[in-house]
Length: 101
Image (cartoon, rainbow, N blue to C red; front, side, top):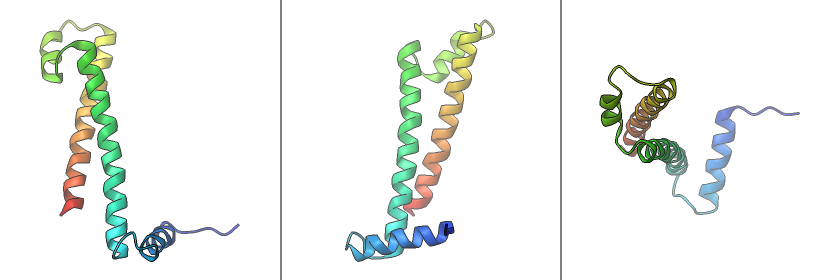
């Protein structure tokens, strides 16, 4: 079985997209694919944040203030999951901005 490097695979995909007249250049094709992948990650974390906001009826900062030293184990799990989602969303947004430049 022939192994392909990630570079070979990405170049092949980009070449195909350019040949099919979907993009003007390989760089445009790869940048567009990267932005789409990053947007998907951002949507995932926004949904997780929205689910927690609906569940607790407040945003992350409000939830953290409500807990103030008396969280149940489930509430603490939600807070950690929420904090992680907020942090990851911020990181992916920064990546997206760098790709847009």
